Image (cartoon, rainbow, N blue to C red; front, side, top):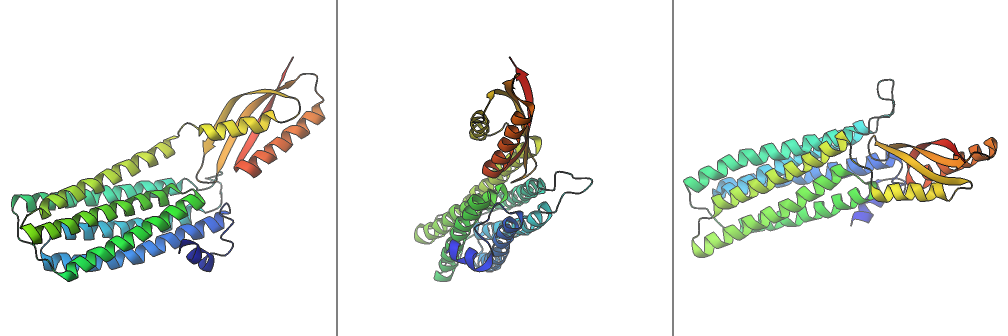
Length: 305
């Protein structure tokens, strides 16, 4: 299903390294998320109000937060793809990390508000209405959210997007949360157990945890993290394959957004090597690293005996 949709809607879908294609992937995922979550919010809210279930209402507003997240994701994808300008010579790629942070705030705030309502329901429980229509609505929600999880996970892997990765994890949490609501409704109907408020508390805490972990990851990316050891090794290995290279040191990698990595490194070369020859070799290594790893790198030459 993922491949069929992508092939039909996104031209040149195979070239995910292209920023324009990457933007189309993100916008497609965000648009599908907006449409799906709007439908889920409206249906769950109606069912939750009818059934007098704080857990279902909480789940509905969780979908509303997901709708907001999808809107932010679309705008984030659009803005992060803007070309470099005088004020931002390295482009606007980090806007995607800012968008992810905004999404995390939306998720956490909704969870906090729903926690308040759920605690009140625990203190003053009320009977919940249950019917096949309620069960059908929840089952369809589980199916839709699992599909959104799979789709966003596929997009995240294809374009290496932390934003879509966060949306995918949130969708999976929704699958778990709605499954818990459905189980609670069944237990309440079968055994008269009033667990609706407790389930609302659990769902709220799960939403808040997702918001916190997403925020932490976004802040780490904005502040700056240590380079991926695998990437460091690949850069080192490519350089050491060059003719006349004796060693490397002081590798620095700067992340300006997905697909926008800049790096610098010092390489040790024989002090007797010809200047023109070693310069040509270094140029070739820089081009190879950019072509194979997507990292624009500047290599400084250190002559050694």
